Amino acid sequence: MSARSLIEARLTATTKTHEGRGTEQCPLALPHRVVLPSPVVARIRIGIDVGGSGVKGALVDTDAGKVISERVRFDTPRPATPDAIASAVRQVVETLGGEGPIGIGFPAVVKEGLVSSASNIDPSFIGVDAVTLFSGVTGREVTVINDADAAGLGESRFGEARNAAGTVIMLTFGTGIGSAMLIDGKLVPNVELGQIELGGVRPAEIRFSAKAMKLENLEWSEWGARANEFVSHVNKVFSPNLIVVGGGVVTKWESFASAFDPLVPVVPAALGKNAGIIGAATLVAGLSSD
Ligand code: BGC
Image 1 (cartoon, helix red, strand yellow):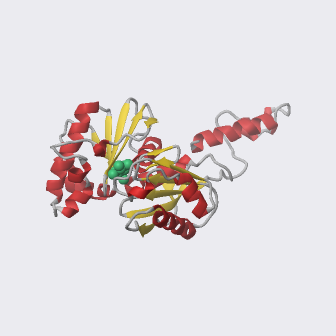
Image 2: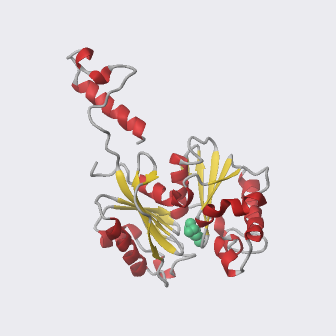
Image 3: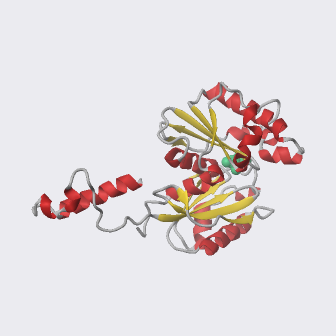
């Protein structure tokens, strides 16, 4: 629920309480000037972004869509087995403290908590119930979705894709390529555009991810040309209204943005590299302890 709808809900509730006592006695019933009886308490949740190279987390004000703590980061253990990742997630949660449910973005296909792909994590993750795993080590209620889906939801609720109509695609360039598709703000989960074949390479993320730039020692301009090829292809296939680029590379947007075809509607994630953390936290915004 947005801050505005939270205020409206509280206003409705308070107005009801005052029913029958006359509007003069109820300051909240004034149509234009709303005087809140006490400050609205934001719902703070932990959002975690499990990535191919780092397990990151922060406390998020889920009404404002803002990170309000230090960003905690631990290297993604190798091999990225269920036990090893679970222990990194536990460390992030212990460092951040607090209480309440946790939203987690995870770098694989996740259907109702079950992990069913493993491009950049240990294959032993396939078939693992990530919800049971992470709630077991943290002792918290946990919701798990694909990491790029979490980032796409973050951008759709608070970032570049806010109120965007039609098809929006979020692409995260990091160890792999993550993708999220939203239609009129509704997520189509587990779209895996990093797994397509492009330029004779399959999965395409081998050639077009940020990891490829590192492995092949590419200049930003060289990698930018690849990113443009990938993004232009996605644009050609889906004709989205907007393509939002996120992931670690987004902090260097100026270094490669000029490579994009000006006819492709591509923008950097407004939430930057925190889109996934924010999106994950908003997944559990409405759950318990409010
Ligand atoms: C995985 C996706 C994930 C992406 C980014 C890919 O290798 O298949 O599920 O979203 O990496 O982490």
